Length: 351
Image (cartoon, rainbow, N blue to C red):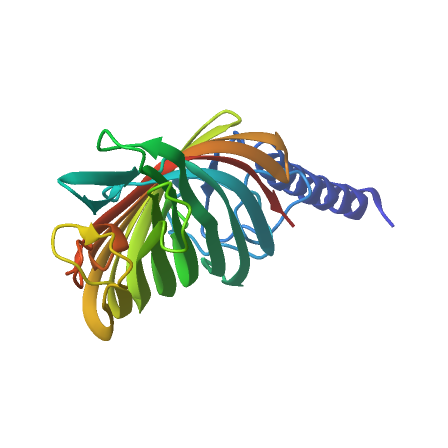
């Protein structure tokens, strides 16, 4: 090979090496900040991208020709699961029942309930480039209130009053959602199906004893009320998040329309139950209604590792047109509103 051909070949090799180096530098030095990525026309997965920068993806994003900054919430993953412990209040009226004891004497039972613990579990799996399918369950076994009264004198005589009073309420909520994510912002849209079971019941047993010691000395009356609501319907909602360092704030809302299958039963009385040993009549009805729901919440989470975070948050649920035993005053109750609200703490794991 003569000197001229060798020079030409060397020049070509140098040109190729310089071109390759420029391309490599362009890829390797592209800044990737926590929570922000800039995508060009097509970016394939790269080993230098750390967990926590790309949500739910192991494939190329086809972005606009002009690069756009993208704020990202979660590491790329195929599925995720979370578990939260919740404390919710049930803002229904306190239960109040009056008893007519005779001789102008009466007794009134009042039961109230406050915060109650429960659990919420969520599982999601990716269904496409920007979507995932989600199942979530919220359950609170029972709000409770109890009262015990034993041998209380009344009416200025030897007769005593005793009572046992109990109130119970529960909530079971199961939802199935399809979630679509906007790859250019921390914004999700949601559409799903939801089944909710809400019920409450109360019972009061009152006894009087005239202390005469004969078989008819003790007179007992029982009052009870039960109400159940089974809601089936559709919901839609949105969620927005903002990332700052290892912290992420998220807030969202869902709205739904439901068919409410209702049932209720209880004791019939006027103003007060007469304690005379004669059982009061009872009623039992079934029906259906349309109920509307609002689901509001917000959370603040901290990224412990690239695959796990802990969080605290607020949860609120608002319903219209539900039956409640606390609304019953000796007759079938009509529909009314009901609100749940409280706080939760838990963790989320991604895989």
